[in-house]
Image (cartoon, rainbow, N blue to C red; front, side, top):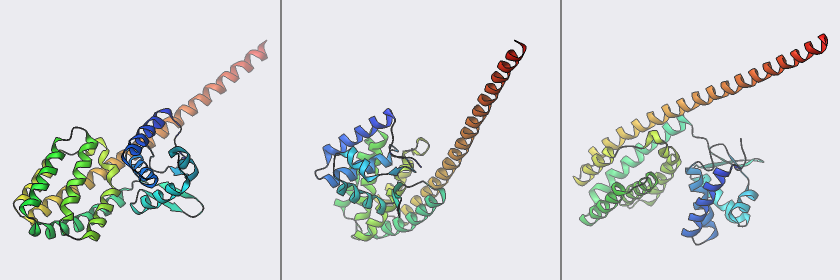
Length: 264
């Protein structure tokens, strides 16, 4: 488990995130929460990192109060967790947890689609058309993800069920980090097929499309995490091999020196 990052590259990333959050949020709590959320989602604060309140307050230039409030909010979102006497840590991304989240999303988002579609007006559809165009036209990966989130949450908000929408938003937030991995930058075909079903007023087709897509994504995430774990193990073995070889060379050098001294 690591503490706050010290590398210059990571510091530069955090500085950019902090500057953007400071420009777009008015209160200290909003600023700290936005900056920390973005830092976690972009892995500037990576999984497993220990988050010390005093260090964070120093980094953000605030008191510990907005930091503590932000950490509590992020804990509710599933991005950090706390333990007695150990403080807060950025949550790890676990394959089984991810699969459970997608199973829940299929149930809750499918329910939201079935509720929302019959209630939609022509004006509602026009709003969604505009938001969908923004998602398609977004140039960067991060901009596409943000526009996608706005589109789906707006759709689910048409249910008139705020508790349901909040539950969905929390689950979507829990896996938002994984959607930034290069292997999970999806082609737009799923979203187009899903929205075509919404346009047609076919809730069951939309739910079917959503469920099959989420199951595919869960498989991709599990595969990505498995490959990453194997790569990490291989890297650790390589480091150990290097250390062993260095130790062997050092012993050989010492032995040669001893032999020369003995013959001298």
